[in-house]
Amino acid sequence: MSPAFGAMEVEHYAKGVLLEPFVHQVGGHSCVLRFNDKTICKPLIQREHQFYETLPTEMRKFTPQYEGVVSVSFEEDEDGNLCLIAYPLNGDHDNLESIDNSDCEPKNKLLRWSNKKTVLLENDKITKEWVRQHRKEEKMKSHKLEEEFEWLKKSEVLYYSVEKKGNVSSQFKHHNPWSMKCHQQQLRRMKENAKHRNQYKFILLENLTSRYEVPCVLDLKMGTRQHGDDASEEKKANQIRKCQQSTSAVIGVRVCGMQVYQTGTGQLMFMNKYHGRKLSVQGFKEALYQFFHNGKYLRRELFEPVIKKLTELKSVLEKQESYRFYSSSLLIIYDGKELQEVTVDSDPEDLEDLSEESSDESAGAYAYKPTASTVDVRMIDFAHTTCKYYGEDSVVHEGQDTGYVFGLQNLIGIIKEIRDESSE
Image 1 (cartoon, rainbow, N blue to C red):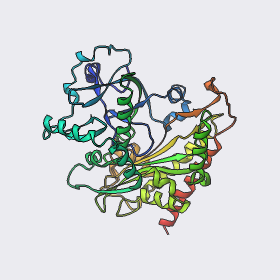
Image 2 (cartoon, rainbow, N blue to C red):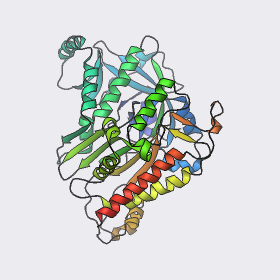
Image 3 (tube, one colour):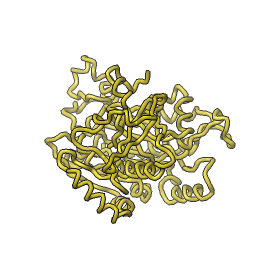
Image 4 (cartoon, one colour):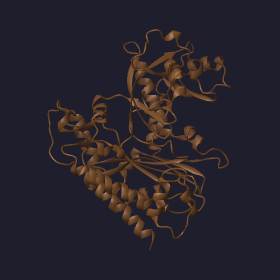
């Protein structure tokens, strides 16, 4: 049985699991959905699926755990509301009317499809009459989604004040604009294809943010080249242009998305890929500084764990023969929850060891007691990955992915610069 399921979840899963927006998605164009607390899912792309199933052992600690494949369907009610539901891949999905979806709606809020766009409805406040009226209004606003997308592109860095006394983590779902955009686009695509197709395969992956109370996430597009070997000439030219006009061509890495909780101001900060593409090398460095700053002080205790993990990843990738990770991303994640106390004289590597052994009572001698690993570094998005073992690829590369390794080398160097300058 897939590790995505606990014993108590099996019966519920057979009835279908409601897929909700994954509120911590900060980059990428593929829709990522929440399956349960510890698992997310995304549309299955054959090349990425093949990567996870043939993943070299030494790379597993630097990628999300692969947990299987599910079938995703959608059902529309008389008011035009749409739910995305995941079922076991080999289950019987022919008779959707026999499925009880009454428990698919969360008690408070649910993203629903209404004509040409999704809207956030509060189920306990909004009546069916309001929904019907809203649908009429939406028919007159068929381009609203596109207009909002254009607004999002212009609003490249957003700040939202949050209620410090409340659950900060829960407030991400009300504010994360990129997650909402990707969810809307996925629903629109499925809606447009409804007459031809109502079942899709999605892969299940480990939710890398589940261990953190307030996840701060940096999505970095890695490498000096982004287009796959099978890209059309138009796609190839477009990707080359994006690299040349961003830090990708210069240092092999660019910002693709970011979310940070700043305890000093009580704000959530979101930066999207459109802003990331415009950054100079100095701007990239400043963005990294901002990612590690919580509004009060620089989280210096994170530098050594991050550098250590990036250096280890670089060593692993240097040994991967013929792999090319075109257009893949690298996530850096840490907990934005304010630390209770940090022993000033503690060695950063000792703190990292403690964070990984936080359940060990011997750690009680230290004042620093995080509830999760201090920092995580993972590779994601392998839709354009290739290597000689795939067999069907017409182009076979030799040696290491020098563009990706180059990006890691520069990323490590820039983080070291920020570390050294902040200690002066």
